Image (cartoon, rainbow over all chains, first blue to last red; front, side):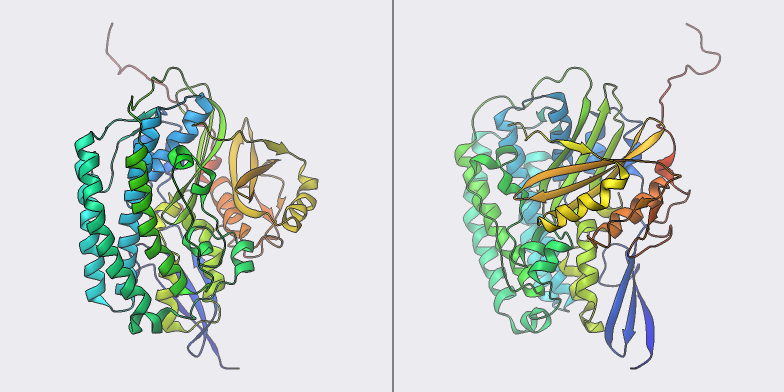
Length: 359
Length: 129
């Protein structure tokens, strides 16, 4: 047996957009064990709930993450609405679903770009981000914000889309589908991508379940775990089928995300066809009392927003279990036994969102 | 559309490991472990998923008495247990990967273990009606 050495990976590393630290225990070039540690961007946002009005806190909950911000805000609102017994207007639920899917596409395209970059494929990175701009343009046009949308409210949403806007969005979908087809073809067939991802970072089906993985990580290992299947919000009226692959490697996780781009477009088309007319915001009176574990499907997987209140305007507790935290044990498992050169690619396949994870 | 109602089963700490074994044997996925203050003490809640339905188990907790770790049954629990230990100061015994207080670096120890923040509005001194 050769001598073991420890190579620190992060918190500053060219492939990491956010800081996480891994101690990689190596034997020659092979990783024997990976020990993660976090805490570089812990902001204590959950504690802030004790000082802020529960309605104002919606804007803080959106700022937990700079990528999946919209779904954080929507899930927090779902939790509060549930304990207050508020039935929000159906149109608001459809609008939340449309914006959630746009969020998902922008996050997946961002990730696909970063993933291409981690393999040294600069040109593909720029192509992904070029397409992502089109998604951000729609978010900006319809909500006023590219990254933080700020349209969620307890009781619904603050902005509507008129018929002309919905028609315009629908008209843009075929062009986006063509863009996604080309990108997916490259991620699926390109030799560079295949060489760097196929058979690497294996997460067997039983391990993925045992380690509590979520999102594209568990779906890339053959489990159809997707919270949208529960039919929360407007998803009960939309034709949704989770994307699942069985190869359980980095390539599978990459293709789950690429194929989910098409699912999002289908869901948006569905939602535009079926969105009812009506109000977008229900009146909210009084303060919440009770507790609830609200959950939703973020681009990275299942997110849980726990809210607990005692009838005052400040909540007692808000706890967010983000998908990245749930995927850390799976990451540790995937890294054990891999080559050092594959570490960046494997780390990226869980789509780590550290700001989100540490809150 | 309202979301499904959830039930939370409260059990004694001594029953925890037995119950967790049952969940594991029945094929449940560990979704999360969370902690919240309850009066002067705390409550720790374990959430599981099977066929898209959430089930919760809850135990009372304090900063004095260690909770048996479930990370030997569900390895994924180590992240949640270390997180609760770092943020709330609640000790866990036998964590599979124990960071001993260094998992989440915080500027003050156990920032969430402090009592609930109460917001009191005060008029600035010298201001009259």
